[in-house]
Amino acid sequence: MPDKTPDAFHAVVLIPAYKPDVRLPQLVELLRARGLDVLVVDDGGGEATLPIFQQITALGTPVVRHAVNLGKGRALKTGINEILLRWPCVSGVVTADADGQHTPDDILKVCQTMVQYPDTLVIGGRAFSGSVPWKSRAGNAITRVVYRLATGIRIHDTQTGLRGIPAAALATMVAMPGERYEYEMNMLLKLRDLALPPMEIPIETVYIDDNKGSHFNPLRDAARIYRVIFRYLLTALLSYGLDYALYLALRAWTGMELYLCYGVARVISSLFNYTLSKHAVFGGHGGKGAIFRYYLLMVVQMAVGAGLTQGLSVLPSALSDKLIKPVVDICLAVASYWVQREFVFRVKKKA
Image (cartoon, rainbow, N blue to C red; front, top):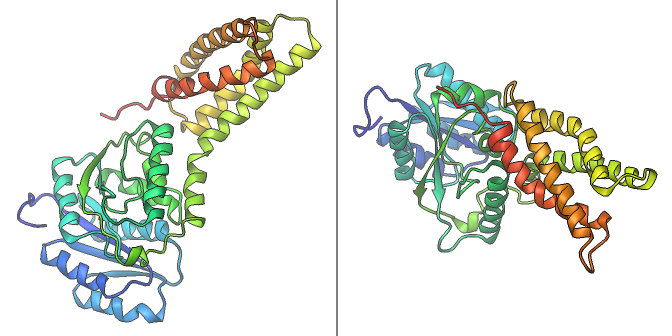
């Protein structure tokens, strides 16, 4: 490590690479000149890229190879596992891209931030100012909003590959699901489960040749990323479908008042919703008190929803109660998700 960091702190820079060019050996050389240990993973680039990796090994930097291309997520997990074996007392791992987007100074900045905040995930966030490819700017903006809605965590640059992972989280990162670009989003989605707060620092926004060196496929790989995020929404849709079907059946086959139909449907569907939410969405968190907090929320939500549905249905020129209920429930679902995340299935803070 450079002189600016304590001797006791040791971070290793991990660079996954698939068909890199001459910029990779140059980056490795500059990082080593700053006193940083580096490990590179050749993600099945083939014979054509062997000279590039031979230059890297000639610099004294180890290279781990995949026989075939397995994806960035797998390359990162292979690299973290190798680092834990080679440097068992490592303090953390800094992941960086091989295409020149991350400067040596910014990589060093992440290392130095890890010294000050050793129990956080340090994220090198780009400002996306200046000449930025439209797919990168739009993709990050959409992901940023969806990620904030799903987790409640504010991260400006959710797609950056420059991250500092503390030692305590490395074993979990090796076992984390995801083989390609979705792995990096999985990492961010697990921050609450790991009680690992993010620390975002500004870095330079660098795109070379309109980012042609990137192997990110905006359709294929974005689908993998959003598939992970939208599993949160699928649970809500399934639960609501059951609730609404019960509501319609009770309205059609019984003579109960509207608010009673609303309440009975919600009570019957609540157990399904609780089980699915606890285990499929919130990772089994919340402890023994989760079910009590959930039903407390359900009672409040049921009373508010039934009252609004009943009240709005008698207003002049009101919609049919069959249409009012979905509108009311959508509004309540947004608030309910936040309460479930922050109160019902809250993650216990680690000591």
